Amino acid sequence: MPASKFRTGLVLIALMATTVTVAACGGARNRPKLAYEERPVELLYNTGYQRLESRRWADAVDYFQEVERQHPYSEWSRRAILMQIYAYYQNGNYAESIAASDRFIQLFPGSPSAAYAFYMRATCNFEQIVDVGRDQARAEAALQGLRDVARRYPQTPYATDAAVKIDMVNDQLAGKEMNIGRYYQRANQPLAAIGRYKAVIDNEAYQRTSHAPEALYRLVETYLMLGLKDEAIRNGAVLGYNYPGSPWYSEAYALLVEEGATPDAAPTGQRESWLRRLIPG
Image 1 (cartoon, rainbow, N blue to C red):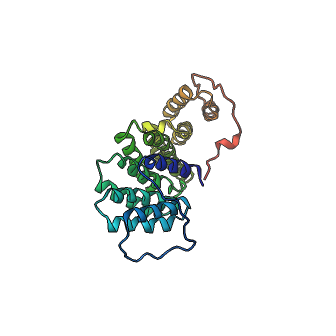
Image 2 (image 1 turned 90 degrees about the horizontal axis):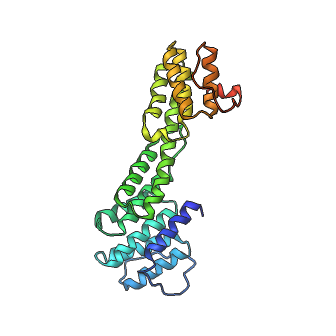
Image 3 (image 1 turned 180 degrees about the vertical axis):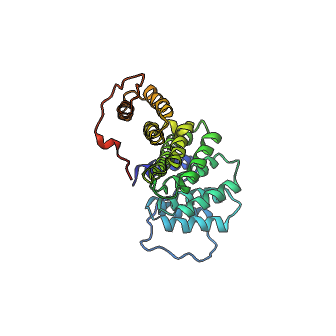
């Protein structure tokens, strides 16, 4: 089980520990096909919980859905939706987990357990983030959801984990801007590249990511391409002030010296290689 899913499981177990009592009995090997049949709610719920403990996620969903269908206005129904969120997530059914989270939020917005639904909705989007060369719609949705968790439930473990994930998503989105900027720079479109690099530098959240030093270095490069030496020197100075030991400043310093400029501060770090000057892509 991935570490993130393990942590999510612990969160759910902690959430439900004080409200669930499960009868001990063995589960069937084959997934039952549930037809509508009146059953005691405790039997339905506990059978679903047993399937959950056996990691039979789809079977568990069947029973929890039956709880919700047969007893829609009960406390058991509220718990059953939470369990569906978790079972869908563990089974990799992110869209279904998000839908169950949305349903819980709509039905029980004032419930203390709504924090879990908000968190899981954001987490499902977070775990579907793709590499920076592709569309980042999931990253944007994850960022919005994680910020919502942090804003609504600031004193909870959900907010603590959301803060870590927010930094990761911002790094991803900044990386996307850098990827596009490098593309334009390779295509000899420095103005378009500058717009992307400045998007990293001007965004307060992106300024704290690992991409900020390279963005400043690329601005030095692109401004020199345009013959705007003063702008190149200014961005080099910002890079040197904030990241004096970064290899990116060592490269920017050497580049500016080659162009006849005299940067105020010498770098404290070492140039790693002339290959750092190449534009990856």
